[in-house]
Amino acid sequence: MHRLYHHHGESAAAKAAEKMGTMFSMSTMSTTSIEEIGNSTGGPKLFQLYIHKDRGLTDNLIERCQRAGFHGLCLTVDTVVAGNRERDHRTGFTTPPRLTLGSLLSFALHPEWSLNYLFRGKFKLANIIHMTEKGSNIDKSIMNYINEQFDTTMNWKDAEYCVKKWGGPFALKGVMSVEDAKKAIDIGASAIMISNHGGRQLDGSRAPFDQLAEIVDAVGDKIEIILDGGVRRGTHVLKALALGAKACSFGKAYLYALGAGGQKAIEIVLEKMKSEIKRDMILMGCKSVKELNRSKVAFRKKYK
Ligand SMILES: Cc1cc2nc3c(=O)[nH]c(=O)nc-3n(C[C@H](O)[C@H](O)[C@H](O)COP(=O)(O)O)c2cc1C
Image: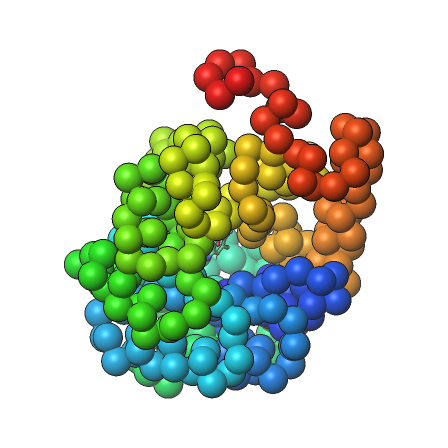
């Protein structure tokens, strides 16, 4: 839903990622369509899939990504029901924003955002707008959408079906245990994203970083492991790589930038991330990421 942050929408993030030589992942719930992103960027692209009750819609999303030249698919498995986002209840947040006394006050205090929102491209859930009236531009909280449209019966067979239908690099996103990591291998996934959805789903769930070492020890030689969430600094990436992750991904770090200044601001965040990684590797005495290992990280307990 990048359009809520800035009129550049998902294209801003995709183009910034391409420019900086990294991968962009777009959501089922994005405000730019699969085809637009496919046409506007040549960089590596991942599509994040949610399984809807309407399986025709789910199949259609996969087929559109194949036609649009996406390189990988990731299936999010931690959102069969919406987390209880209390701030959304308090603020009355809906997508698109509804006019209430509180939101009007907020619009007045943020005139640049409001003008941008009112006079630039219209908010729409671009990938599903033609498929379901629930995805169209009506007042709807995202929590309601998830609870009405996502398939709560999703199981390992469904995930395996998606792996086969996609037929290319495939990540399960939202894995937090060794047991599930092993099952991801069994169904043929090529990667897992260790993730708690940026802390937006299960209250009290552990941080992905705290699960990393034991999952790497169990399956790190059989499947690619991406650490997702909580990454704000170059040192966070280095710590994850030192524990055995192949890559890191992040959301809020670049969404804040998108809200502040569109594509240019995301590029600044990525530049900073890159320069932090480089500088901190030098400070750690590492010439290559291959030299990062557990000896570089001090633990309070376990995994010495
Ligand atoms: C505003 C917002 C929207 C998100 N939407 C999705 C989504 O549609 N699908 C998904 O798999 N994850 C979604 N996430 C979670 C991110 O993909 C990612 O797991 C999370 O942001 C990582 O944590 P971080 O924000 O600390 O980097 C969203 C996160 C945020 C902040």
